Each structure stands twice: as structure tokens, then as C-alpha cells.
Length: 92
Image (cartoon, rainbow, N blue to C red):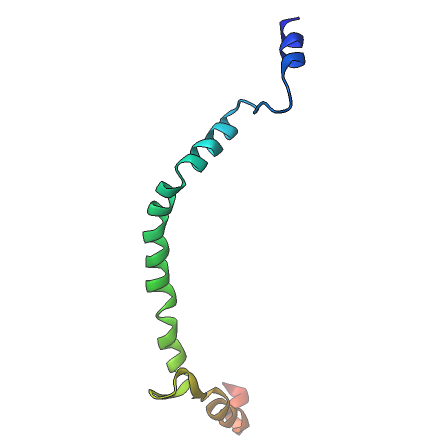
């Protein structure tokens, strides 16, 4: 009987009490803390995982420092197409 009274007294504007809602309230209240913790990990990931991709691109280009990495000509088609035309390319 007690539980029926509690349910009938509860309105739609009240928040449900539970572990998830408490966690979300805490997260919304202290969001700056999570940004401070995640920012170094994000920066290190970008620096050590994505910046070296520029060096990998240079291996397949006729690199020109004036044009930069994205402006230089690609060498892949000119070098690899000659190797496909060789008669021994099927055995490789």
C-alpha cells in the first residue's frame, strides 16, 4: 500500500532516482574535469599517430618542398605501372 501512495504522489517533473541519473548529473556538473583529463590523450594520439602519416605520404610522391606534401605529384602510378608490364610480373 505504501508503494502505491508513493507512485501516485510522484509527478512527471521529478527526476528518477538511480545510479545512471546520478552519474549523468555529476558528469554535467564537472564536465571541465573530464575535458582536462581527455585533452592530453587526444593531443598525444594526434601527434604520434596522425602527424607521421605525412612522412608515409612522402614515400609515394615526387616530393617538392615548395608544393608541400599534398601538392606534390604522386609516383605510385608511374613506378608501379612499369613493373606490371614486365613479363616476370606474374611470377612475383
